[in-house]
Length: 260
Picture 1 (cartoon, rainbow, N blue to C red):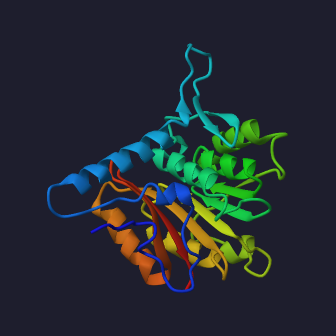
Picture 2 (picture 1 turned 90 degrees about the vertical axis):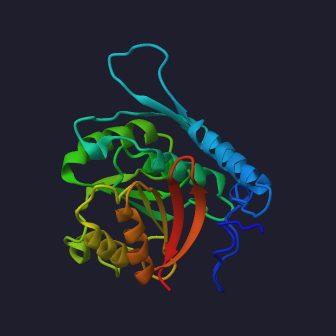
């Protein structure tokens, strides 16, 4: 039996498919001699290698340490801060950025209003900005300085719109700062915002506030503990959900969510 996680989870009335990049990376499962399992492993490894190929490191020792990424025809340099967990770039952000770049036929970023939650080092913010989106990039106060530095460094004079970097503590002052009457988002992005975080109920409340009819959540998550599985179950109680990528070799899944 063949199954594709990106396509078999379709719901009536939901746009079909997520682009050839996803269709080509379908996980194939089967019974019998194990040949299908080998195909699944190969497909996963090929897509994972394609995603991680965006990453490069400087070949010489520099005064400032940075990680390099190639997206949207640009070389992106990301400065991390190892003193802060939220200021380290995790692989889920690379997976999300790869998806955005390779599925523009279904998820066109041009002139779209986008918010990133828990933006961290800002890679998904930078990529979506380079792809033409109007982006609001958010995180906690202690993360903003490094986030703003990365965003400004990599988007200045390269984007249709200047990204906005601002504080957002989940669940706090949502209507005051982001009133639903005037703030409509086409996409809400999130990468690895669940792991080791004590405010998951507030995250759900924030997603619910930001999502209106037409808003899509694109959310990549690395599965490490049962907490991630429980959060998916709680998310499904409030949102419709579709699995776009399943990458066992990276322990990462990418979901699309929307209000039913």
